[in-house]
Image (cartoon, rainbow, N blue to C red):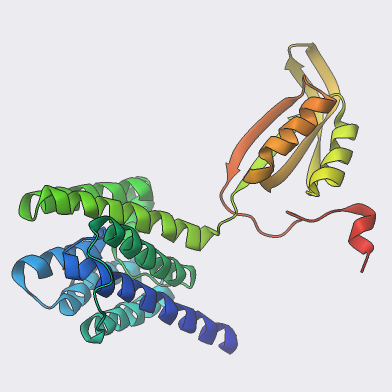
Length: 288
């Protein structure tokens, strides 16, 4: 338990370091914004010359109080440590300007910031209070987290276009999009999985080929009644498997070769734990 906790805090520190590099080496010297509380802090700093570290901490306090009473006290403690450490690093870190290219600044600033936020969130802390607000509103009013964050940042970037410039607002939107995507990839991983359900009169052959050609595990459901182009069918099998998105064409070719009339349903899978995702079954598994 203690080792796990130490590991979490080490990873949070790495996340903070990456986020601070994104801010100090790319975004802050050029007045570019990210979304959320960090973006508001940058906007206030660039227009009123108020110390960004103090602004970041001050703006985070209401969100942390909200999280303390509505979400998780443990998350609040980790987040306080993370936000204060980020503020200190922003205050004392010094980096040389790496590039003057605005496009590269937006992309790489968003890349480092997204990696930092993703690693931090994965270990139970947040660097931005917007996520806390979004979770609270979702729990209270049922509005999706994504919509709350999108609305919040729409208002922020609109204000940026008025106060700063339209160009800064557009580059800031690009930074936000890169940050959001990299954050998702860091939290969820780079492998993208697809769930596949198959109904076929030749299910036995399809199951065998999935095992031999793709090496994926599967669950077989017993169908009682069904209706389709061929009319009513009874006592059939439904194959359910999860594969990497890169293999979707391969499994479709495999099924089409065996049964062109098979019914196939594909859907995105957000999170997987346990099971056999990428492993050959049968005799090959026992070679060691």
